Image (tube, rainbow, N blue to C red):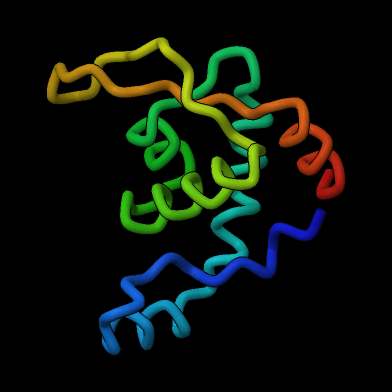
Amino acid sequence: MEILTVDAPHQKHSATSRQAARRVDFKGNQRKVLLLLDQLADLGATDEQGCDALGMDGNSYRPARVVLEKFGLVMKTNATRKTRMNRNAAIYRITMSGQLEASRYE
């Protein structure tokens, strides 16, 4: 399965969004998020925790996580954790397929 050829998410009806998506090196972010969630396999991470761990902005982290989720490499659990703003946030974990994919990069 080749996951690193996916285009960055963008609004197809928006020329500026399409242009921005072409300028983003999104492939590296997918790999970073996948490897982080592989390291945190038992604990998982909220998007906020993932951003903090990788020093990544949410606008870079979330789209990468969404693509991984669409490929079945990451899954949203029913569990939540509190954010810094004391709100409940979903915890995402790597799947078995995700672990297999992550092992290619170790």
